[in-house]
Length: 295
Image (cartoon, rainbow, N blue to C red; front, side, top):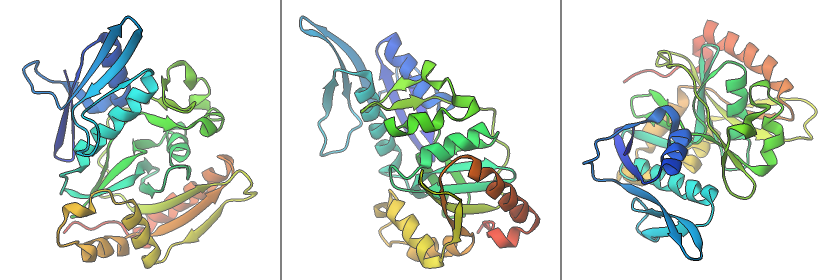
């Protein structure tokens, strides 16, 4: 029995085979711990063998409109559904703060929150931070608490088919296919591990809106206005409905406290100089990056 706890929410997974348990632990890495066998599971995973072949089954933990039980022929399809159900359980009642569809990394003394829609380059940027010795908290969902602190939910990077060759350019991940888990449509889940995180609460925080464009001959960094930051967080906030009074004033206040940058790049080589200079300015002049203040 596996237990996942994040941002005050808890999900228990009963993986009823060694293969499924191993896949769960690889998918969620340091986020999992053992739960007593007497615990009522949120989600059940099973391998079902029949005369026509074997299938993988998932039950429990889904959205109300989704089928309670689904079966899949591939491990990749099952893991995508598992990821979606776990995220749903962690988000649906969460009132700890704003759950953002975006990554979160700590690099050279600064925290970077990078909200973005799928396909914008979040995962590639997350892999680059890891390759450069940064600390990754999440590439998928992050929490901006109402008091200003941030945290991320660690899980394997979901590298889409078109991004595999890009990630393989990084020294740390040039052979990552050997340890990857299957995803869907030719993609791969990339497990990652790192040491315990330092205290990042008092570090400057910046929003990065990434845009990976292979045709970009040079990196472009453009400051975001308050309205642009607000729109970006609103578009990627996954639990705004959990706040019946819609605390847009609080979200606006948070936006005003840190800098936002639109970042378009065409290669990883273009990123090093930008983050080196940006980190230097942020650490030595924290007011320029708007470090979050606790309330």
